Length: 177
Image (cartoon, rainbow, N blue to C red; front, side, top):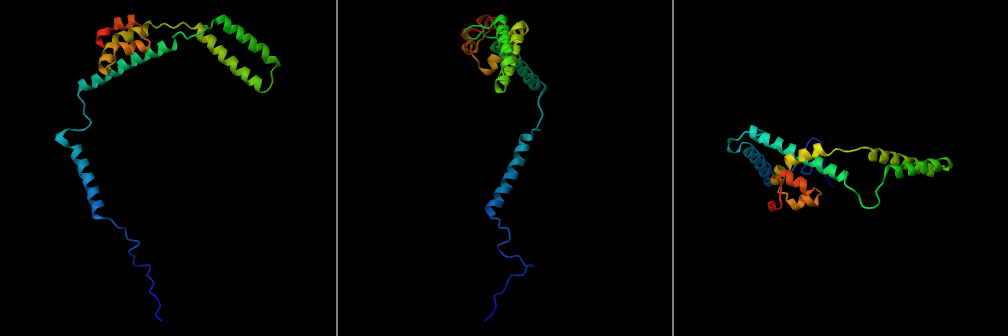
């Protein structure tokens, strides 16, 4: 009986050779050619913008910034439903927490510590007066341009909480719907 020949280590077998179909090769070549054609299409140089285009982008960013700041301030300082907190009521709650602190232990003490931190922050927020006049002036100046570029209607602004007086000052009316 003859012994079966073993493949030698120096000769690669068919199992170790990479197999590449001609279809896959053509697809790789095709995608490279397409990318090259797109990058030089119509002789345009990539990455250049005109000064007017850059200025328009900057104006849009500035308008969005003023509108966003005003809407955020409106949302933050909008009256909430229910009984309003006064500085006196928050101070009373803070005194109650301080009183409970002496008898508390363990988890209750941690909960009271957090409540005390929250009440102090609420008291500081109630004591701070916010002047929205600068934010309103920025909104009034930029809202019409922003509204036109984004297609935002009078009704959408009203749903977002903007007052009719601010919209009128910005030049946005119901007929712009």
